Length: 361
Image 1 (cartoon, rainbow, N blue to C red):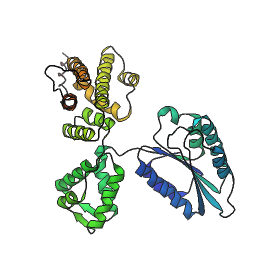
Image 2 (cartoon, one colour; image 1 turned 90 degrees about the vertical axis):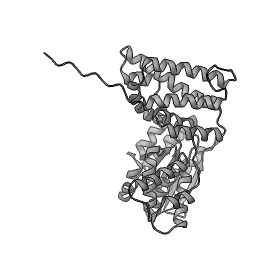
Image 3 (cartoon, helix red, strand yellow; image 1 turned 60 degrees about the horizontal axis):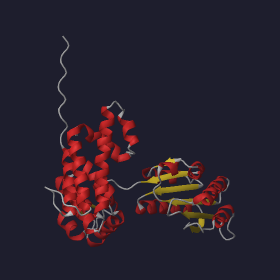
Image 4 (cartoon, one colour; image 1 turned 180 degrees about the horizontal axis):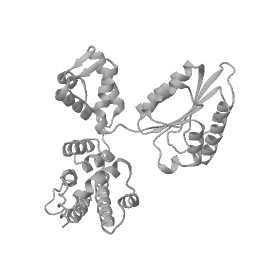
């Protein structure tokens, strides 16, 4: 059974599965989902809990199997929690997880909870994960997309009896809040909780939020890629500054931008030769949000534009490596910013108008 985070509360109200597998790249949401499952389990008499963290090849999986296969002497029901921070249990761990899934099917007194990081497609279709999924419920917890962050903040404020102003003023407040906490959901949660301590329930003004909320945003090159391909110039500049301040290597930022440009070039060329767009995207390993962004921006990008961007990426590669390039800033970050904004502007441009079809005679 595959659950979404939005379905979890309703699901738990109807009863518990013997095994839950939580995986994703947002620690706060994983923790909250696990807390909700534990609370529901405690309400149904699961009063004992054992936690096993698999760190490295020396982990003893026999302890997990023993806990999952035996009842406690002091509690009628127990929670067996298995944490695998790497997401890679290894050959022995994979076999143990399959056995643990088999045990979970036949035990009413043990609830098994497996916590994992974000998993790639190959892992999610592997034997041990499939065994866990078939024995209970799986919950994939993805990060909150930038566009969904303002309503997420508004909902959290509403839960503690607070709200922003109505209309454009409130949207401005939520956008400011999102800019301050982007990429750092745990800090966002803490900043929201801080507002409950500072101000009474009711409406919050922009000035109150501005005074209270710290700039705790954290950026990564993958989110930078989304901002650039989304044509979001202001966000791109903000993220470039954040990455530089955090000491991210110039070469990593260049690699991300150049890979996007090369992928756009290859997909455009493949489609021009008659390759179906979905096939061309898969061949370049483009999927998820980036797949949707590619589908949107490719009609806006001419072959000449992409050729110029490929050439520009090559020039910036030299600058990052210490070479001088005519007509380019010699500072690596300034050149990276120029390259990012060049692609960003093209992605934000309106697609060329399609000429009207001639009427049939």
